[in-house]
Length: 192
Image (cartoon, rainbow, N blue to C red; front, side, top):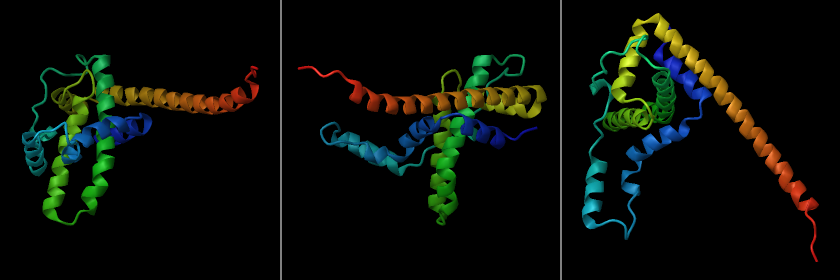
């Protein structure tokens, strides 16, 4: 069976989900940098500073898996959302793992790990059609059910192909846009 890390890596490489991870990690890291002068009151500033000092408490380990999820009950929409969540989790990992590995202070390392865990849950929460509890249940079921694991791998391949096609189309459109901008300027009719 393919490991969850391999699945997440493949999914993240094929899908452009860095923005999802950035959205999830941005809330954890920039708590104290989001306050602006006239928009916040003294109470809000105090709450923000207090929140910045307290490490996050979300973690997939603390979440109970949803009941009744199996290969037979898993819809295509839920499977697609699971693959999107895998990609987002991998992007969060790519953001935090180098920082965690580089940190030598045990307390700061533990704090980074707490933020990473919180960001993983946040990344799942921003994906439509899946909750962290459902994600955990699918993950557990895939480890026990070869058919479900294969179904996930197949969905990753589809997502990878779609992601690659979308990326190529965007690159072609950008190249075409550059060409038409130059041509449009030289071919524009002159009015007198």
